Amino acid sequence: MVKGVNRQVLEIRDPGSPYFERAFFFVKPEYAFTGEQTLRRAAEETLTGTDRLPRTRRRRIREIALRVLGAAAAAAGGAIVTAILLL
Image (cartoon, rainbow, N blue to C red; front, top):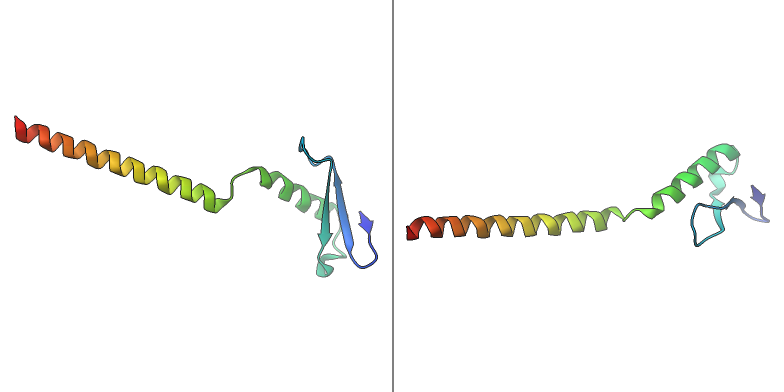
């Protein structure tokens, strides 16, 4: 952990990304006296969660997929009703 002039900074070397070699976290003043292990654990959890899609984007993709499936089910139902009426 590196202590700056006005802020406490946590440096993570090798964050597990092929693109980045270091990550810096600026600790909020109210958590300045929290243990280094706790801060490192929180920083690593933050870094591992960044490779996923944001919740709103995942929700939007799910919503679009459900609409497409609903439209396909409606079309299939219409085709079945039409086939029955034509027989």
